[in-house]
Image (cartoon, rainbow over all chains, first blue to last red; front, side, top):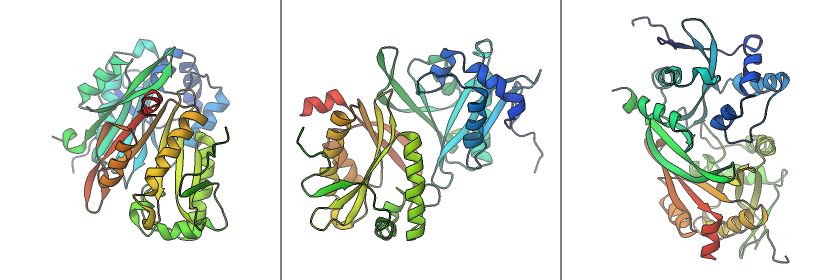
Length: 182
Length: 185
């Protein structure tokens, strides 16, 4: 078998979380309400260092979760998070979630490449059959990135989210292993 | 206000009985169609001890995810027949993810019809939610019909996300919004 460098692309690599290295940055990103509103459906709330450490212990370091930090290859900057969770069946399906922390790093192709790396990992190492994601209708940048990687639209969870005085749809997208490995 | 919330024509919805329910529920898990509603990952029949642990783990998760679980009992003999669970409630969004499981095959296909009526009234009029969703696998066509008749709309086809009985299956997400339910009633 040809040896390859796993989880590393041209722009980014995926590496484990490190509490000492990462906690300040994770706190900082969560001061940006736009970041929080793109990332999740819970009300935008800031986290203290202690709360982040507790969250890392309970989720990211859970042996049944797969979570990585996104780091730039050129200058080793920690720029985002990506992970697989919500495993269904015996690793038949998982949900992927991704966020890039700083606005200056958005639309640079980092997220798209990180997504390709985790799909490769999910399909070629974990032998998943299908990977799902959800994305809000007000995040067209993310939707375009996911379409570029190969995700297909699988439906719309109508008016799922209540935010900023109105209801928003949440899109469900998915990709099969056979669509990734062509 | 005096309309009883926790019963339908033939069933009571109650709290879990930690002493007696695990044994009955574990018997139901010999049917893997029911077991898969309790055990993610490795789907298998559960012993009463494993079932009790499932109940304890579920209560912790429900507390964290702010969910609600009801045991469903036959009115004639108060025996456990299954459950209704609001597995996740996003209070700020008024959205919930529902699970319904009928372990006793005598009641399957019948209880669900009444339970959906309870769910809709309870979710929209007591919890004041806006949206309910439920996932129904492709290999449960009867349940899909019951869900549609209850007023849910098919919204998502999660392609080949389940492996059961030797092949991959789709899992369908159905949703209903409070204004839609209001119009039906």
